[in-house]
Amino acid sequence: MSDTTQILQLPGAQLESIEQGDDEITLHFSLVHLVQEMENAMEDSLWTQAIDLTIKGIELEGELPTCPCEVSGGDFTDNIFTYRDHAPLPISWRGSVSCKLDFAGHDTGFTISGDSLKVDQIAFPRYIRHVKKT
Image 1: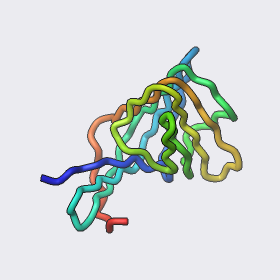
Image 2: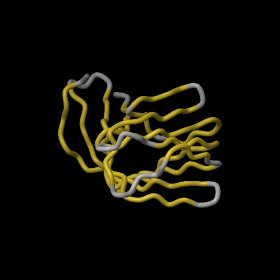
Image 3: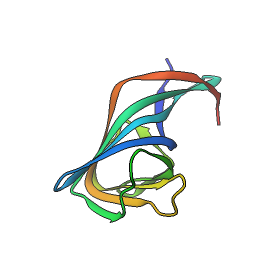
Image 4: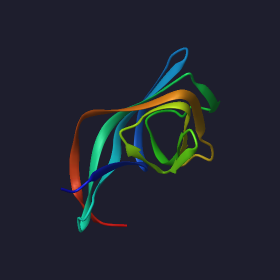
């Protein structure tokens, strides 16, 4: 039996809206790309899905963008690990966490740091196509 890994890709993600409370923020993405990697398979598969990314115990650096907007890249940080432009799913991290996002057509982005970061996948992913392994 093969092991399967899902990788969330930041470039091209569509940030639909932002909901901010006193000590938490939720980023609502209408579309992110997921790469499903299967061990010993000749190709991976590309999927799309809506997600909510929630960070609690927040500190915000930079300005939040006007939504909707397209993410051009960024970093996820889980304590000592930094993932550039991608992160393995599932995500339910605690400790020193952050999400740095850059946006298409903008020179600046923002960074949200906190003490927990969680990604909730909304509905079911939709298959796009198979892709060559990188």
